[in-house]
Length: 281
Ligand SMILES: [Mg+2]
Image (tube, rainbow, N blue to C red):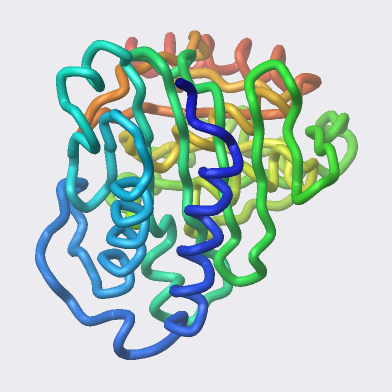
């Protein structure tokens, strides 16, 4: 049996309730160990992940949980979970550094898939941990903020576009010069610190594009937002302008660009040019 979207919302709201009082506190930032995703796990990450595991374990489900701190864990019957291909992909806190420093931009990201690749994600929930705002989507049924349908903007570069552009800090100057063709078209650039929540801003039309110029992004950061952006009419593609795809497994990494539908052709055309030039130089 498929997992209901309401269970995903219930899990997200339980994380919100528990984590909100911890935001910006010293306790939140207590360092534990290094999580499966490679970052140091902090107290707040563990609290959030444990809530998710506890709720799932009380439900009658057989699935594979892929989560930032623990990596992979079967919930219920492992054999049944392998057979039914059900997966929940979670970032308990996306934007942990914001969360512990009291910067109001962090989220919990929960995706549900039946299958093994990105396209098999069929339900998603992302909750803004500062406001409790709930972004969610079901495949083929649109994307929503709380109860309101959302969609991407319809702006082109003549209309003051705002993008999130995340840079590789060891490669900053090179990043700028390689992607100048695109960057010079953007009116304002933001780097907010929670990829999942930034992609929700794209989905509701508050920003117009998202470029990740770091080496790559972790699957757990983008699994839920992938479906929300798509269902809001947005476009997602790779750094080379190709179709985005990834296996749903621990440690998977993806290079991701996303935009509204109007900007997609321009961005893809320039990306092909940029990549050709980068290969030659
Ligand atoms: Mg995290």
